Length: 297
Image (cartoon, rainbow, N blue to C red; front, side):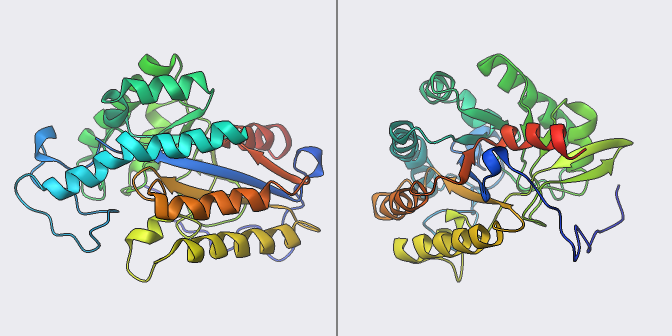
């Protein structure tokens, strides 16, 4: 276990990053595909799901929570396709964080991801909280998810994001997979290296603020206009900083959240805005990793 914390990062002088084509900002969109991997007694869980749905503050029950199940099902039945078609039509690069069990339950979604050459990152085997999961079980889930991605998409994932991690997660991922990066961090606007399990390991931080999950949390977004304005403000700040010290911006999306019509318009509005800029690198996550390996070892 890594008992150290890094409060310094790149510090006062920062890192002078040069993105491809001297872009002022690297912009990366992530679509989380979790529907079917959440807590559900049909999959052997004791309690129903409570997290990231239309029912803020939902209580777990020892039985089937039919409303919760159908909210998640909307994400795979309708929300995924609404978001997928948007990115395909606009030819905007996209990365999918895919939960292993969820991917196994929807062949059509997996085929669409493959056909569009979308990057697939392992999002673990289950969309559950691993904080108190036994290390042996978590290792089994990591190995299982790794094999599911290989079986469905033809190769092992290059990246990893568990999300609801435990203290052993990063070490177990490094010890049991060949991923070149993980994104279970929110601590910077640039990638950084860590030494874990006697190995130099790349971390590409993710985001919980530029994220539609805040539609489903207390003191979050309650309208699409708030989501758009927050994304725009983040973009404008980082783009301005990019005149001297270019950074990276993540946008996190969920099929069952921004995939709803009333929220989708805010995403479309943001895409309209950022596509006006010629000096922004909109990319896949593994492209950032490759660039870092080649230039910032």
